[in-house]
Amino acid sequence: MPALPDLNGPLLFARYAFMPNRLGFCGGPNERGLFEACVEAQSSPELRDWTKQFEGAYPYLALIARANGLRDPLDYGVVEAYWLGNELLEGVGVAAMYDSILERFAPRLPSKILDLVLGKAPAGAQPFHAFHVLDVCRRTGTLAESLETLDNCRISWGRVTSVDGDRLWVNAPPLVFENSKLTLGPDMIRPALRHIDGRGFVTDARPGDWVSLHWGWVCDRLTGRQVRNLRHYTLRHLALANQTL
Image 1 (cartoon, rainbow, N blue to C red):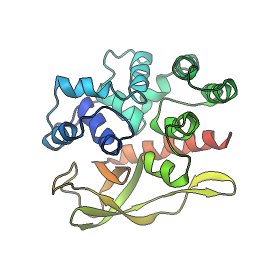
Image 2: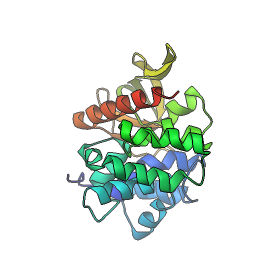
Image 3: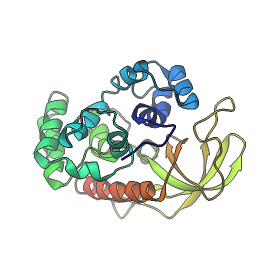
């Protein structure tokens, strides 16, 4: 799975990790360097080192790579699998997922909650960002358990309807709580920040483009395949989360 000409695995990771890092939710203190690397599309050994400070995300990357016989956790396909979903997730077996959850979260969760999260592995959980948001973070206390927080933290997708200075207006499905279940509501137009001090990662977006969003920030332009994958794996893990709300 080749990378785009100006984007490799570490830079792809950084595009999605930038805003939660800027907001102080995860990763080490390297916001400005991270932003500059993404804007200039310049990877570096320092950027690779920085990704390892994401204690939530990086172990999932290592798991996906190991399960698929790949040496580099920051392989472009591995990073894409974690944030957006792709076929590499299907290469992670139940036992490997179960063992990874047990090793990482047994020291942090009460036994009843740990058993609940461990049960997600045989139920179909995969090392996908939405799984971590919906079934792990809200139980470890990493995130406040509110609908707005969950919606902001998941990777969402939308189609650009207009460009307005530093913002894009994007038609995207919100996360809603309906009939005692989490689901995606009808598309609604919402603003998304694309520039900081006049610079960003998707500077030439136009109406009709598909983009990805994380904490209200425009991370990347998406292909049709990426939109389909992100929708598919998000819906799968929403259904999984709904089993134990």
